[in-house]
Image (cartoon, rainbow, N blue to C red; front, side, top):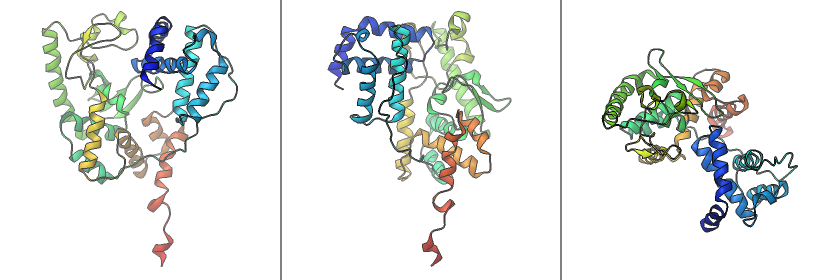
Amino acid sequence: MKHSKLADVRKVHTEILTQLLVALRTRNYSIRTEQSYESWVTRFISFCGNREPETLGSGEVVSFLQHLAVQRNLAESTQNQALNALVFFYDKVLKQPLGDIGNFVRAKRPRRLPVVLTRSEVAKILGQMAGTQKLMASLLYGTGMRLMDCVRLRVQDIDFGYQQIVIRDGKGKKDRVLPLPERLVNQLKTHLEAVHEIHETDLEKGLGETSLPNALEQKYPDGAKEWGWQYVFPSGRLSVDPKSGKTRRHHIHENGLQKAIKNAAQQANITKRVNCHALRHSFATHLLESGYDIRTVQELLGHADVSTTMIYTHVLNRGGKGVKSPLDGL
């Protein structure tokens, strides 16, 4: 969809889109969800000819969702995200719940097996990296955390005493506990010392604030300056918080790590399609290879349903692990 059309929608429907952002913020949705929902509502209105959303209903919503599946060939998860955004918009903003919108064409892309690296390949990739990015990549593989779990990690969530990392308010609004790899303990402590110096310098300048989750800013007025609430991987520069308008030090942007891992895989001459999530997939698969049960792996990954975790057993049971080629019997 052309940017000019979306810009026209935002210009004409500024008030209703602002109401959407207010509804999301009062319910403590993340900034990413705000951006996603605003984008889908804007695209929906543009798809319907820039008409007033109050005049649109379930029929137009179904047409839009089917357009995403048939013409745009988007994935099922993307179509579901668009549906969730529109359901929220009509229910919480327009006060016109969509109710049962009936049957519509569902997006169905074939489910792909995850990209899994061997232990040797992981070592080669990490060997091509250095500094903070290597530490972050090591955490992705060593704990199985998601990319944004790592990026949003707070100082107080690393427990050196119990040698564990607590992921708070992760995907699905769930907390979970992950093992802290022993070989990363000293590196993390050294890294945190450097981060603490940055924080102290910010405080001396009258700054030193970070963003707090949910409504904790009202409960703990000085909490945003406390060391425990600082991000483990802070941005190299200060920025203006889009919600509060205050100058703060946010977390590092995830794009840098994504590019670093991709480049490291290329330098290591690995032809697999490597990204940050491949390290998480490899963590899960290697645990199962080591004999850990599926429920333990499910809990560590934060999967709501064990069937999601079962995909890694398919990886183990295929190819050389599960079937002997008849050619080898000749």
